[in-house]
Amino acid sequence: MRTPDTLPASLRNTQTFPGARRLKSLMMVLGLLGSVGLAGCTLPGAGVDVSGDLKLLYAPFSLSNPPRYWQVQQPQDSNPAPLEWEDKDGRIALAARPGLGAFEIGRRTNVIVLASPFLSFDWQFNSAAQVGDVELVLGFRRQTQGSWTESDLGSGKPTMDQEVRIAVGQYSVRYGEWHREYFDLSTLYRRYWPDTAADEVRLVWIGLVSGQEHVASENSVTHLTHILLSR
Image 1: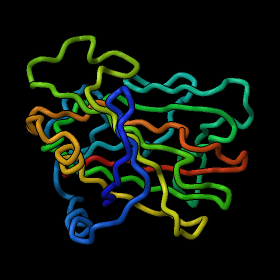
Image 2: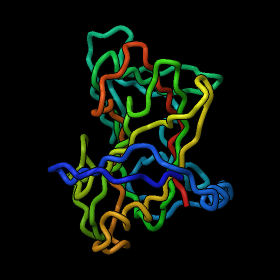
Image 3: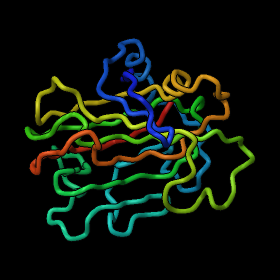
Image 4: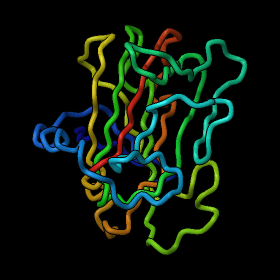
């Protein structure tokens, strides 16, 4: 799990976090998650498997014509494109090349943070990639169960009360190897927005964007796969 350090929020209630340390106790808990179901995910077609876990980036889809609830933005005249699917070490992974152009890919969700507090994903750097070339974006909203409308099930980004941006990667890693990151979403939200009732906080957006802090190398590639929400 990563416990991020704080940087000042921007005008859009956005918090940006650089790299951080792992907590062994939570990693032990997460090792038991395989048989546990996910509660509080009510978007139709949300990618929930038979065990109840919400899985993203486990299988490829059209980036030019993404499925419902997904949004993909990237230059259309770049070859290779900033975002492409690749078979990486036997895994289907999203290859992100921010040095070739700005991009954003994300999906709407409707997940009660207390019911599904843990998020994990796998990533790999090539030798040119750096921490922050790609950022994970998490959108939160205070929302009671009965207050959803049809517009909440549309396309594009939903309305968000808070947006968190977390730099993907760590500074001391071996290139060409897979690494797994864990986040405790409920702890993250309580730490930075303690006055909001936790049982009303929902994760409404999960996305990946090209980093804002520096210019990525043209040869930079960050592979990402297996985004998992669980409890």
